[in-house]
Image (cartoon, rainbow, N blue to C red):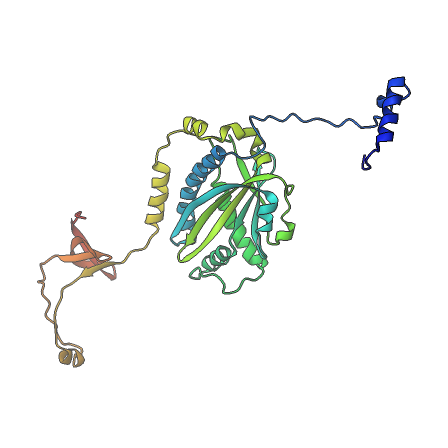
Length: 326
């Protein structure tokens, strides 16, 4: 009741109540509302334990991301988990700028979407690198073209598929899928503004270009498995895995790398005057003999000794000795 009752009105109500003229049940027109049980032991928010476990999960994800992006971008990539914090989705959406790169990820079999925000500077650098450039961002932000978004979507699909292994101990048979990429923050209302979320921030450095990736995970998505998001369960359930997967990825990357190999026929020192007056047919005496083995350098490191020869129509060397010293 918005108005304040006077003393006379209060006395009249009390007298009617005592005489039976007034029945409070007759004035109760309140509709029944469904009541939802609230577990005070498990409030609908992320605890420090949950945030700490998410950091451990995404540190595993960061290692996979750095290894795989190097292969596709052919550029040195460094990924580091900065921190994890709890905030409402409204706080996250208010921090977004235009244009923005938001990947909407279906986190099946869990219900709901996870949002991956990639810094626009990293997006421009990825496009430039995939198109054959050095991987430099633009001086001034602009809207992404359809072709640029297609390239970024392909890289995001690769990043999203890497989520399966780090989350294996928490969510079995995880099948994340990129639904779409949004570039306008006004269309970023995927959950209610008051929904509690965990925001994991990672720093990604591609060559000399550095930017942030924010992964926004609503509480409603992880609620069915929230008991598993703690360090005790995570450490007890995670399986000790062989490093062969990482070794194979590194070996595959190294095998695709091209390195210069030089066979040194010999060395000599001449004066500048002799160099200027060199003519076809002149002979330069080197410090090696015909029967001596040649030094073969991989990069700037002496790795082999060899004898000169020919193979089909090309000059060649035949390896005789391998130097394995560091």
